[in-house]
Image (cartoon, rainbow, N blue to C red; front, side, top):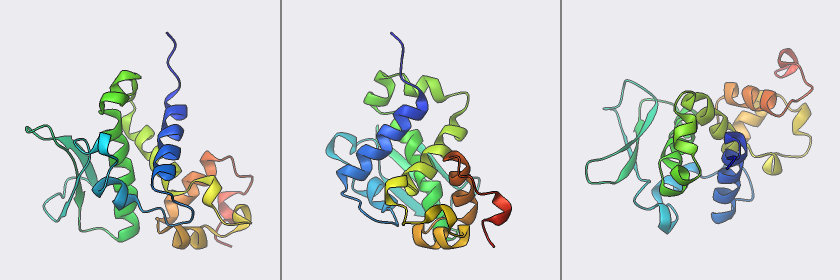
Length: 171
């Protein structure tokens, strides 16, 4: 059986979460996705924020008791925390029963961070929630609206194949 692409599955996961939480405008409530997960993900997602995680921005791990947890470095700005949570959320979703069933976990092992970052950008900046005229908005303005770092907006615009050059984003 041919499995769907990781990009397709990632987009489906983002769309399902946005729909489940009824998100209809930016900024996307990513913290809620982790702290109040759907019932079938309750054992896979929870959040611990603090200053003890300093070796990375965020990491998803499954504890010995079976609970999945996103550990978040609390020493970052809120936009950076939001993006780190979204990336770690992807890793947690890949390790769920459903994620394993469609081959997502095994498929992302070699390139996990690239896929997690793409998911993070997609879930925090979904095209359907971007404001009218977003293609010509400065990256700084979109970053403020979505409460994400400017670099995330710039990468998302590249993902979407925006015709704008990066040099003109902040003009």
